[in-house]
Image (cartoon, rainbow over all chains, first blue to last red; front, side):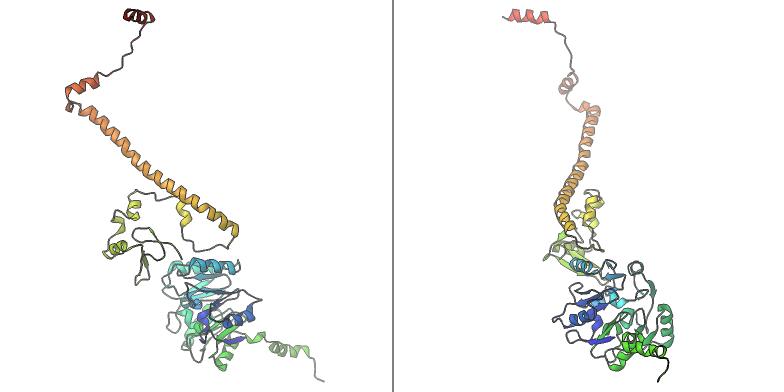
Length: 245
Length: 165
């Protein structure tokens, strides 16, 4: 179920937070509103951790992770690294990597099985991604943009990509990632999908500028609507009721 | 906060000191003082500049490979905080630094010991070959200075004593 929120009056949720199936990272904001929304949704399911990376708040674009691991840029300080290691569960491997392209969130998009990376990423980094995150790595571009991490957002159940992606590209990516993909926008027509929203297998958070149409597209492609009890009852009604009196 | 190493001379850069230069290929160069920074700008190679650690390690003047250096390596995969481990580490740090300093001093004394034996060899060779350079008087003294063991019988010494008195 998708929520609409803001970080200090800014609708770019994917910049200030990182949501995976095993944990959620949130930036340290001036007020607790941002953090409290995540907490109310997720606190009893997964750990919600407040952190900074290299002293900055743009954590969503600097780090990349899934339920198996978390990759951090070389600008992460030792204290932040230790804080993350202490707060995250032991199954999640926390690793800092030395990579020229330090905004890992913009260069790498991943779910629990597959990752798409920037075509200029180092070979060593690619191997580390495959090792730490436990994914298959593909070097791809999306609608001609090399920053795959920013222009697409996908989970294990579906994905949303840049609106100008051609149908052939969409089909190719869909076969690579093995999930249904849709080309759409977020935050009233913003093309930078991953910066505007953050998603995992059962929830999504979008900027408050997101229109109802965009929200319905997001809910349908990431299959978030099924969690509502009404849908389940409708499906089961036919099998439950024999005949109407 | 992290104590970094100067790129040029390899000394530690403490907070509030030095300059950090970021090149266009995103490589960061840290310098401890303007001396190192200016040498870098002159495009000098630290491996050829005698007072840097890079030169000294390359030419075998300072200890390079030791297990104590492994403790200071930068680690990218942290471990969960454990109070006991932290306590033991804090106790161990001054011990490790002491041992490292001792080993470094030992390395230098060992290096200089070879000089002493070489000096002895040179002196022995000079004695052997160039002995005619010394004046005859001194040579006689040196060659005739052999130990002769004289057996003195008990009777003789007593006679001498009697004579004196």
